Length: 102
Image 1 (cartoon, helix red, strand yellow):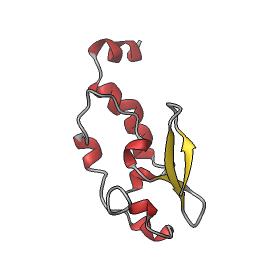
Image 2 (image 1 turned 135 degrees about the vertical axis):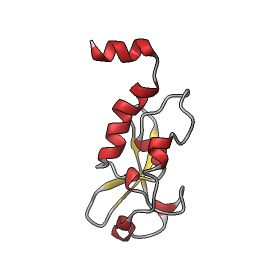
Image 3 (image 1 turned 90 degrees about the vertical axis):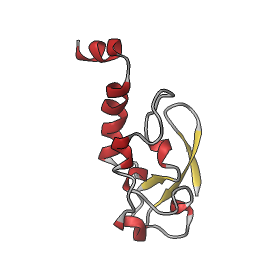
Image 4 (image 1 turned 60 degrees about the vertical axis):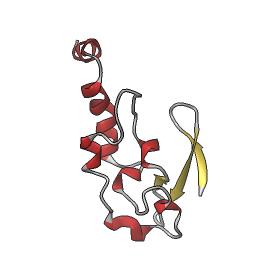
C-alpha cells in the first residue's frame, strides 16, 4: 500500500493491481462528495457490489474498508467519475444546477 495526494491535497491510501491499475483503499476517496449528501447515496449504493476483479490484487489492502473490492475503488472507474460530476450536481442547490446548464 502507498499514499498519493488527492484533488483536495489530502493523502489517501492506494494499492496497485497486478496490472498496475491504481485503486483507492477507501471507495469514498474516489468520489467527489459534499457534506449535504448522506453516505452512501442510493446511486452509489447500487455500485458498491463485490467486484470480480478482486483477483487482480495481491494481499488484503484492497479489501480493508468494505471487506471486499468494489469497482468504484479503481481510478479507472467510469461510475466514480460520472458520479463525481453529475451526482454532486444532482444533489446540489438549484442555483448550482442552473449555473452548470448556462
